[in-house]
Image (cartoon, rainbow, N blue to C red; front, side, top):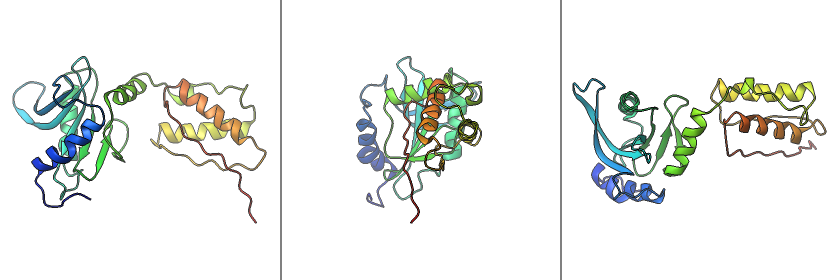
Length: 216
């Protein structure tokens, strides 16, 4: 827990700047990071506000905005303002940027087109943000991906994969629990699900656990 009474400026300088640097952003390179950049309405009539940080792609498009608050405030207190920023920026480039909301203690990552904000351990590197953007722009509908019968060929396995796919695609879930009896093909079902997710560009890193349970 950081000091509770420091100002927003001090929070940025002493805590958030090092956190961004830790994610391999060079704060002195203004082709990577911009500070207090005005966000204009698309028609240029007025400035809607100033972002605390811009994180740029190599082509100068904005990958993410960072909204900073002092440690005594909820990092998400400016969420509506952040949404307005990314919506305006989207009108001036080829995609809507991601958003981080931080207060020195907490960091929230938000893809406002896809899911609710989520608490993360740190800022993402340019490479990781580019990876997320690639997956998003090249993602295929999961239900259009044919499940390989060479991996699973039982109806209940296929049904399980489709149900999880729907939870990911329609309900924007990031986790799923699949309960299957011993000997029903858990490992193959998981392998087939991973195959579907990879071919759909829905994920690149997938964590799975396949334990056997015995009720005594």
